[in-house]
Amino acid sequence: DISSDSSDDEFEKRRRWDRNPLEGNQVTIAKVWLNKARKRGIFTKAVMPSIERRKEDHCSACSRTLGSCKVLHAGLARNGKYDSYAIDGLIKEFEQKYSPHESDPTLWKAFFREKAQFMTICNICLDQIEQQKLHKVVRHVGAGRLTRPGDISSDDESDEEEAFFFEPIAVPRSSKAGAMMSKWLQACRQRLGGEFPRNGSQHSTEQYLNTLRVRKLGKSKTVLKDDPVTGWGSVSTSLEGKKIMTKWLNNARVRSNERFALKGLEILGSLEKTLNEMSLESDWYFGDLRLEGKALQLEGSHLMKEKESKEKAIESNLDLLRQTLNNVTSDLETKRRSKQSDFNEKVAKLRNESQRKKDERVRELHKALHESRSDEMSASLRKQILSDIEKEDKATAKKEEEMKADLEECLTLIDRDIVHARRKFNVDSESTRERLIREWKHEEVLYRHKCSVWIGISSRKVENFKSRRSKK
Image (cartoon, rainbow, N blue to C red; front, top):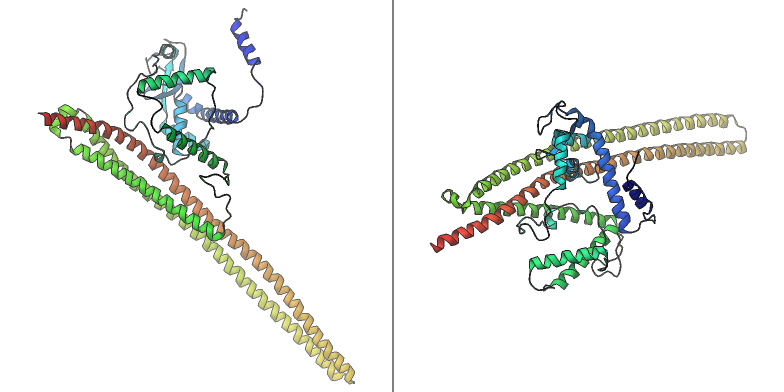
């Protein structure tokens, strides 16, 4: 066998790889990549049997059977076309719907069965797809359309923090990366035109550096005493302080949701206002824009109904959680009363038994007093009576203390179980509410994005239409 030199060259390159330990951002990037790769491998392996079961006896693209091709592959599709990277899009949607850290295989399989598009493709069509990738058109710097409303989203539209944060890196201009970035910067400036640096660029840079500092502090969860932005240092709070902070946090969340809802109403109002300015007679000018606006309006009403159904689902889930909490606390309270009642019965029985022993001992000693023949013996017997009664009282009191300690221990455990049940209810209710709200908010954000794009385009068309009519 004659092997090419390319494999030897690749082996030589791998042998010369730097083996020094990674530091700083390099470690973070490597860990992020490794975790994503592991998750992709586990998720892909979990759904491979489902993909193979959907394999058909002919190609979905050209209808070839095994008699007309060599191999039929079962895979995934996106927008009706075969895509070998469709699994990455599904994983991204799964993380957006649930959480970037969610890795439950059962939940992933259910989501995959609901969202996945299956496709069977032959080796001939697969080769054609690979050839198209090799000869795809490269878009040069500066080519493409202008930025439209809705292309740039603000940080307020996402209620989730960034999963990872990388510190800024200093890139020397003399390096290859520096030369590439300088070329990119120059091309962007030529496309934008005008003089550089812009007015206010220094202020924007300082503001951005401030934001980086705050993010870094939030990530490390440390506060510098001399920091002018967040500088209060570490704070120790009492129980009342924690309650005040929790109340403030809950109020802030409520106000955030109210602002989110007001923003939605504002967008819907702009949509309705723009639609009212488009008459049916002017469809010759607006084309399909009016129909698209009507469709967005219907979608908005559908989303409102979905929101109401989500709120009802939240209330029903919370009712079930409250019922479970009431059942658990009721059982624990019943157990508490039973323990208290048993303690009272045992204490009463112990005291009665102690009183019986003391009475019996007193009768025995009185009998001995009647039979005594001297005053000294009588005094000694009386002293003995008092001593025996005192000993019996001490023994009874000691037993009562032990029984009371056992009761307090049992009641402490019951109280702890009640607190744990209430804490679990709070966590479960908050988790249920946040999960359902997050699902609805994700759909709402996508809808607002589409509305912003439509309003931006349609408002300009409406202004142009009005100016044309005024000129006539």
